[in-house]
Image 1 (cartoon, helix red, strand yellow):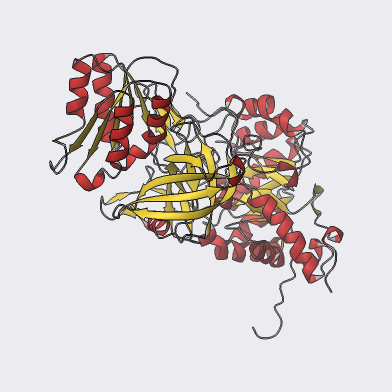
Image 2: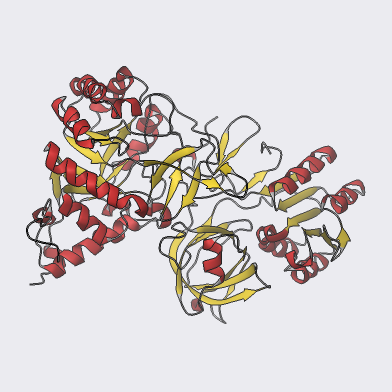
Length: 279
Length: 314
């Protein structure tokens, strides 16, 4: 029942650092991508891990905001020049608004990498299912799967075309892996009209999907997980819950599990076996 | 006037509890201390107060458990904890490697449970003091009933007193008319130290969904938003009760620490600020040392209760 045992907890690899704001790109708003530079050496970041980013504000919000690490690259030719880390977010409140308005050249506090990312140990063809800004959690995963020569399709859903800010990137990565890219919008403004479950269902029926990685709104992930279960496919879901600290101190971010227990999203997750979550 | 920072004496002593510096992590904001060693240097802590511990493990409340508000946050964790036995077995040995004084925060549903918890840790040298949690607003029964009624609090402290030789800290609730009255009841029954304040009961509603932001509807407010309330209570309790006081409530800067010390606190617990930045305690210890050195203050003890009340405000 109890998921929180400090003795059984994996050790933290996260570091607390200042991060230089390199650029902020609006896609347009409310979607934005914030590029931050951190000094070397920096711990390695596993796909699906996240960062707690302090908005350039003092009281509202007071706490940091959790974001998936979208990309991580060397800042220059040599390792010594540090790393550039991107987060992809959506303005929904004062915290994200302040981050979208961050000024290049200023420094933000950053705690990363946090949480347990995707488990890549299983085999088989994969399908990545992203809903809107949730696509950020699948970005480094898609890169890693290409590097590991795992073929995957990428299903990218949103209300309309503007929700699919990184379609070009995910399309390229899917094709580089040998797979396909399926944009889906509820209003039909881009790609197929409807929900991500339609192409996913077809891929499952065609036997082109042994495992699913998903991130997006809860109702979407719930539907994806139930399709996966029907077809006996493995499914890993990256969850988003309100987080106070991101590192296991506040115990605020619990996720209900099917066995009746509660799991800390920031330490046990944010990636869960989709069959273990009480959606 | 300025002196060398290394000459500043940060050590404090409260009813026999000696701390290398006046800064501690507050209960419920830093787990059991060991989990976050990678994020801050525990050796810089004057002390750490554990997450509230009960006789049996507790799962806590359903989500959502936290909601951010302006200048702070509401929580309704519900005392999720691993239980006293797991703490003593799995965590306490690891804490022996650090100079920080370990204070266990204890929570029970009855006087007898508090007494059993206190008795369980009495013989353990790794524990410097016990803090009685009689003011958690997030559980339906137990705890808070003792913190809101002077007679009940007095009976509780009297039941715990014979079970332990360690200093007893009573953590006061701000959600009462007279914290001083509760503090006096605790003192008369044998408490050694008071800590103030626990969270302030509050609430938040999402105007779009028209639903409360917490599953339990109400929760405990913490963070900078509650600092003036905490400062007033620390001031009143330090003067009105006559026991050493540990201040808690929205501390995030050296100025905050000094305000509480001037109001009468001998030590200061840091809570919600740790969620925002995990190395806040060590930052504050160093910042306090520099500040006192710059001001030519040789010992932080000189400032305890030193607020100037004479004359008219500047």
